[in-house]
Length: 210
Image (cartoon, rainbow, N blue to C red; front, top):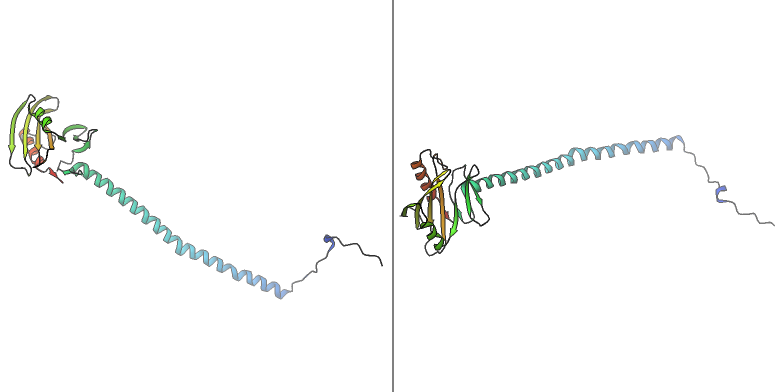
């Protein structure tokens, strides 16, 4: 008996299955019933999750703006009120405090230096005391710390006098030289020169070490 040659795989015939009408309708019904479920999950995502994400993003933005605004306000108060790390002083709003390269603080009004604060030694103080133009030298009794004031005539544009307050806390070697440039009209809020000197004196009395 002769052996039959193997059939090619492509010649294999698979049995055909026919769907009757009932099975077709059942499959169509299952597909249609699955669609609302998917749509409902999409609706749930849009109606619940997305609003919460939007609220969370809005909250982050509000917090960020709040922190930024607080930083700006604090920075402005820091400059105007003189709330520095180791001292405080109540300056007019138009006066800004800036630190120079040597660690001293300069008082600015409209980009012009109108005073400042620097730490000096006793030798540096003596050099200031013996320069030309000093015409007043007083020991003040109305300051919290031992304070000496001198007034110097200055021949410069925009400055008539420079008033130095040498503040030296008891038992310390460091002397705080708090100085102001007086002019007419004044930089610190007075129109009259005499009133400006009084105004400067009241500002100097607000100086406090922390």
